Length: 177
Image (cartoon, rainbow, N blue to C red; front, side, top):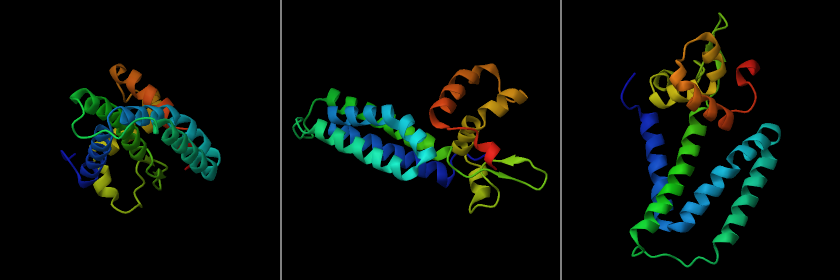
């Protein structure tokens, strides 16, 4: 496993960009990031049943957050450091949710022997993705119940992976492959 694949670098760049944008906004960045993370799971549940309704819900939540932000004045770059820090915190929350969701959203596949592969071996750049540390973390989150049952994970990971699995995964996607 390489230290950093191009996929990992792209995810890191995405996370950094979200943190930067939220830090520039200050307190509104914290509010947007926090509200987004609070609505993340409900929108994932809706998306599992009806993707168009999930998009409409996300747009509605975004519009309501925009209305909530109207009373806040445009903050300049001269705002206090704590304003930037609060915004960065909101951006870190939102960026982490976005990156984690992307790492668990690659297609699953099975080989001829019925062995489960994440990501599937027949997608473009599958070999590159197999070497990615981000994809390895996404694989552990996505397949947590299977890995725990088979004893492939030590108890020190159970709390974190279990929580992330409950937040980011709807249903049992390995049963649909």
